[in-house]
Image (cartoon, rainbow, N blue to C red; front, side, top):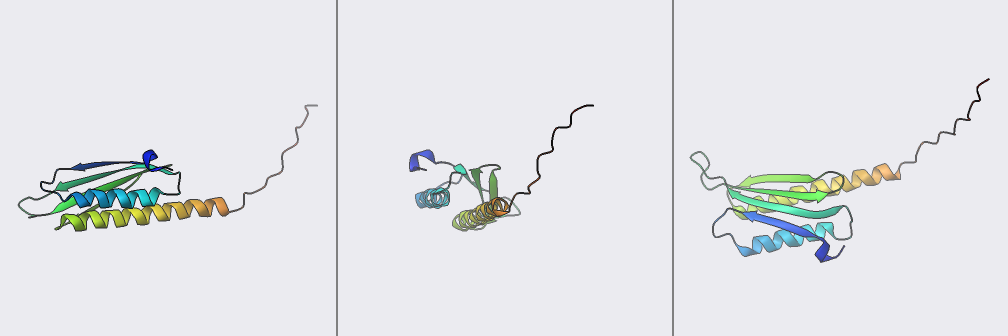
Length: 122
């Protein structure tokens, strides 16, 4: 998979977001997809969920567009960087586990059932 085949959508409602966060997310997601044909893209969303009860809290959502089912991770933290880092860590772990499960299924021998001979009507 070339770098052009893989696209990350990045959305942020956070003011003054450091540019290096988007670069880090792109690099980590591209590395996760490298050498695999199952992951065709990803999406990253960052929001400030600050309110009366949660001062200065951030939420990061990361989705891997992976076959056969998309995988998502959401994390919250008081620091924007920590929220994104934890969400990426969780997503990477889920993708690795997903790939391992698929490998295990493909490694198991298929059950052989001999063909049933056609029975002619008498």
